[in-house]
Amino acid sequence: MHRSAIGIRVHSGWGALVAVTHQNNVFEILDRRRIPITGTTDAGASQPYHAVRNLQLPEAESFLANAFAAAHTAASSALREVIDALRAQKYQLTGCAILMSAARPLPPLEKILAAHPLLHTAEGQFFRAAFAKACASNDLSVSKIKERDLEVALKEKFGRDAVRIKTKVQLLARPVGPPWTTDQKLATLAALLLLSPPKNLQSLRRS
Image (cartoon, rainbow, N blue to C red; front, side, top):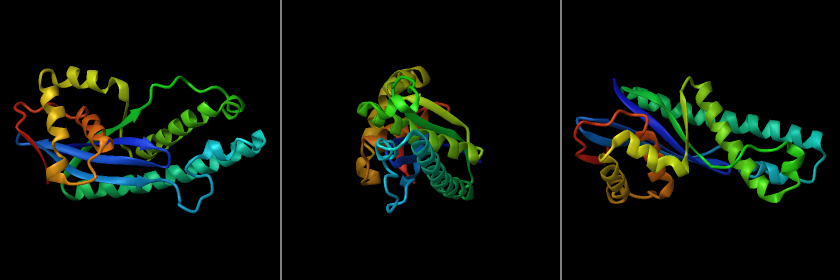
């Protein structure tokens, strides 16, 4: 089986997922999709900390626990679809790279709810944690990579080939078509960190 890896860049309520492999000196984008992990009718689900900022602490904790359980379930189900599709094509998944923020550890909930900037930080961590737990539920190893450290990690992994890899990922917009935004580009680069560098990088293409 050929080796592959998944990269995910997370937003509030959803993540941009890309699955990538390389074989015969050619990189391939195997899958890419937007994975929503909240129901569109769930009040406050996409911004759960904002939704509870005026609640009493026990109510806020209960809401957040239920919201996290729902997000984890949705993420786990979506990941299972991707994993099954890749395995059906005879690809072995080596793991999932999740891009992380550089935010400091969060204070207790009551302090988060009292400071609006922390609400956004907490929600970012909330949905990244939901994806990470979903990976664990699917027996998929997780590598957490700070987005600000991605370029350094690429240089350490691929050496002088790192620049060529970044350029070729940028140029995939035309062959693979939209969407090919910063989300997909960074998710692809993160996933590539989980794969061994090819001996002779030639091209990237979508299968």
